[in-house]
Image 1 (cartoon, rainbow, N blue to C red):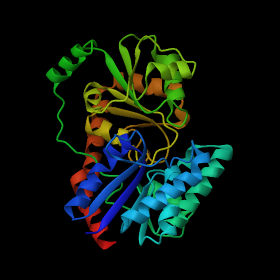
Image 2: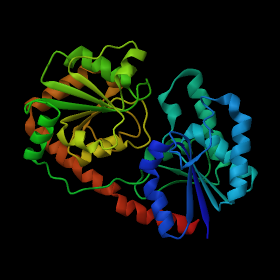
Image 3: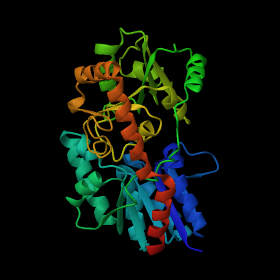
Length: 359
């Protein structure tokens, strides 16, 4: 039986994005394992290989990774994400594993400035050099990676990490009303979503500035911040507006998409934004920072709105336009919903199985 090992930095995200791939691998008869660096449940495999935060543990991580790979003798090693891929890639090549695949979920250096941008650029370049194969999640990321590597850069199907569970979703007013009552939101209130972490890269500071400058005085507007808790505001010396609600980590974000009217994507870089695809799927109107990884999905005024440089006033003006022009809003939502079909998980898995069998 052939063996596959996936290395991913975070179990929570790996469980979401890698589970469909590993299930497909099992269906093909592979013995597949997942090793994560943090948030790992007790009975799952854990090795601390996050060199970004614990660089001093570099030699220990090298030893543990090499030992693990040597004992398990995989036929294929997958290394996911830019920063966390370096050590597993290196160890896989040291042990002469036939296929050591660099699975790039986004190119972070394009969203940074200064020394960090330079460091991430060279890390990306080294990862591409170490990988026997390179996969990425969108045409835009493939274009960027092609400028730093001469190797073939592959995407599965139309792109993404595992496809999205496309559903024949139809908005049901009665269900939406029940949900709003349950979480004590007025039927006529407008619901806005932010999904991300409390850092600059994910646009946390931007969405708070946008909200405090233009939206916090309107009590009929409600902002739900998924992935953010009240402590994140305190750590960043921010106060929580009365009409903003930090929700912390949420396993099932579909409930919030179900009642949401607008989604603010204020991130500074994305590989291929799943949050945007999920918004499309649940007919939530997307307003996004104009960045690669989003602009492949959001066509301005056709499938959503692209806002240059996260301009706060443009977010507000766009919302006000959509509130007045219901036909435009409905047309854009309808167009966006059609995009999701291209990334349907069932279709993606067919292409992924074909990719595996050809390795």
